[in-house]
Amino acid sequence: MLTIREVSKSYGGARPREVLRHVSLEVRRGEYVAIVGESGVGKSTLLNLIAGLDSPDGGSILLDGRDLAALNDAARTLLRRRNIGFVFQAFHLLPHLTVAQNVSLPLSLNAMDREDARARLADMLAAVGLGAAAAAYPRELSGGELQRVAIARALVHRPLLLLADEPTGNLDAETAKQVLALLREQGKRQSGAGILVTHSALAAATADRVLTLTAEGLKS
Image 1: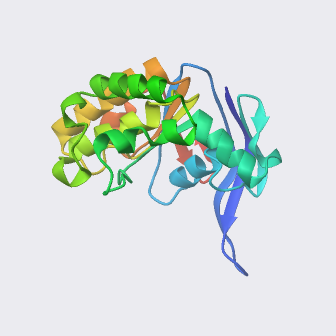
Image 2: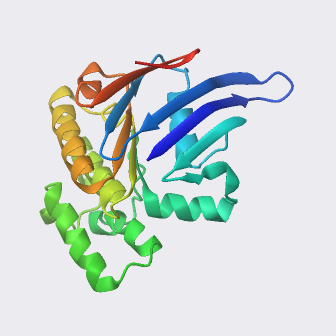
């Protein structure tokens, strides 16, 4: 479902810094993959490239057969909105919106029918154990609850691909275990495939396959 071929990426002007070099990866539908590696090796950069938030200097990224490099900005935005769910370490919830409003954002952006969206939202909030917190604001929630909101928002539109960038980095060990179990369970149920970027051995152990990103590329 996801095919990455010889992707490279550098940043900087006169003296660019190479972040990724000839990275290749294939992820099958239904597969949950963890990518580990030292800080600064390019894990988050790789996720941003997969999501179409940035463009590689070389190589190709195909999502469900579509080459992201061949799409213009508007087409990439539409593809991302419909087919990708992103869970961030820092949550990135909108503080002036309630839990229900934050989670339902992807449904609104995809112009889902109002009644269908209401039913989808209720099902998703129940799945992550936040049905009773629908009217709460982010400032009223714990770290674990905030991450559950972020997971619900990433999955509510049933994306082809779920991307999670250090989703337990701000959580205590017990809450991290709960969030990881939820992420895997709901990701498997709602999404076509998932990629988890993490420093945590605990988080990586929940994946079907663990890969290490180094300066030489991805290794099993």
